Length: 203
Length: 382
Image 1 (cartoon, each protein chain N blue to C red):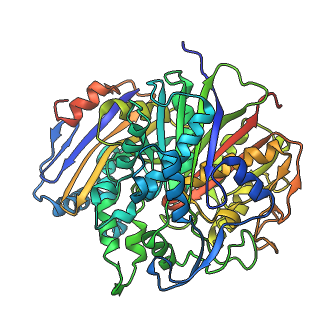
Image 2: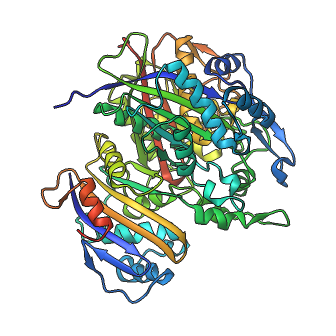
Image 3: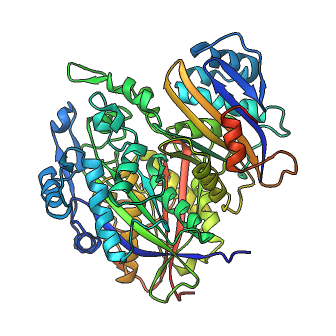
């Protein structure tokens, strides 16, 4: 099982396979810049919350240029991990249900579900396989690698978009995501040691 | 090469407004009870709704009685998980503090009630750590938060954790506490009914939120004993279509059914325990998926009229009750159903029916386009 490609997105920097990507913007504008540079033509992006935007642009960086890019496929899973799921959206939705100002917003509520980000990635890329949102107390490589390897017990799954995506608010976020492939010959071995290196930008 | 282990249900607990054990719950369901009540003004919500909610005082009394040194009344979510897990691990006779035991926790919104007051207590991962440490478990608990299919995804994942033999048991526990937050959200999506829900009925008009906790202790074995329930296989699939509406062709749900049907023939099945939330779109979509999977002749049933939609607990709760039903030779009634109101003639009834079969499929779907199915089979069948 190999890590075919990996990406790290922080509010002030983006690296793909360990190589820094030249970006002009930072914080909230960074995700919009990545959208304009790489996703380009998916206006639904602007309706998404920050966690979904983060997941969608990170996935784009992992899979752009793949053959048969938008052909529906069941053999690719989306397995994302976080500490606090959609806590930033919980806060936003909560503001709409105050006693004296009760106007609950369906669009804000939907994004309070932790797995909408895996769903948005599946919709954008036509991934019809396993999609699961996990939470761990912190991003420890060992339980992450173990859980992803377990998910590959699905007899159809051959590859997975997986990793850690966290958003505190519109301009504070972090994603460490990778494309893991069961059949690839090239790439880093999918081990806790290599995930640790990717996470700390030492890979 | 390590031998692939089989996975069985070792013990379980259902904690609901209808009872604090699986047996109490099964007796109540079989007798036609329901926890769904009409609510006006509950949680300060302006619109009425029907829901199955816990008596908070009864839970506090139970916690004081069975949790040593309990001061947990303030966090209902964690209290429910602990009460449910405690009963299940006692029945299983396992040591939850063993490193050979792992915890998987399933919930959609956990302790979201604390938002605005104690935000550090909102993430389910935080509650999971507290609950696992209450039982002295040394492993990092894994949380599954996959909208309405969370409980089933948790069981599917737990089965895989056991297959390579690195754990002996996984404690899979799910819980959902209803709140102003969740109910207002589903109300503004026009998904909540003010009246008791009517799965698959022509007059269905939305779901009833429900509260529950449920735990299944699942165990690795080399051979499935005659009297044990095997978690044969399961899968999660995405519609890749819409974040808050199901596929018009039942795509993901059909794919999960196809996945599990590779392990059994349709005439082995006592029933398919479907999601049956009683929303217009869900039940229609499920009828399409069942038709595509060749399951129109197999009895189907939904328990949402009894418990409402218990969200993160549903997959575990409904699987445990389905096991009890098969053991008792019963296909439980779909409470609230009267007149078929979906495109395909699914085999649904509002009366308990008898069955001599020993396997069933549990099916769920949720926001984010996700769907899950798992096949359960009583050992020795086939």
